[in-house]
Image (tube, rainbow, N blue to C red):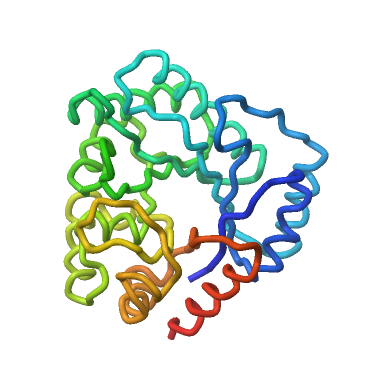
Length: 279
């Protein structure tokens, strides 16, 4: 299992690898632009070339590009859907420029829309984006905790989205350990994790799983409240992560930690915990 962190792009892409090296990253996840706004900044191609060269020199792979927070294809509001679609198209294009084969996307919130329509909206948006961007970048759908009006908190709903995507080879899955636990799947026990993976394989296919987001949960099993916490210090706990990290169906996957941050110190603490639990 290759381990890494979500790395900030503050100050430009030329600073990313330095931050990644401080954290002992073997893989990384990044935003390609400001994650908290709709405005998409223009890529500085000179900085991008430096970034790609340093990534290769330091053997950091794979690279995952995460969508910003605001896009929401599930929305029934046309203006939000159109802006979200534009953002997805842009991220698929930018990922290729950055040397990434993957874009990670939150499945979204239905807001005032019924769930079936929201799931269809997501698939329609993905189909339109794929028709506009003909490259090899794969879109990874991230499961949610089911907080508020979030959709995609159960495997059945994710299956419904994928079934409606025309180019199924370009869509995959990232499982966030905190989210799936908070959604009610008890991955903290061997039996619970085995059953979850069996169900995932039956409904979607384990081959669709390309990435893990490693986060402990500050809230209880089935809470439907999304609160990431430090590895081993939350409700999944050390024993739960030991089971997850060493599971034969998961140990080949890359994993990104999205644990709470306080500069480098907390990241190194979480990395040390993960490494200590890997056999």
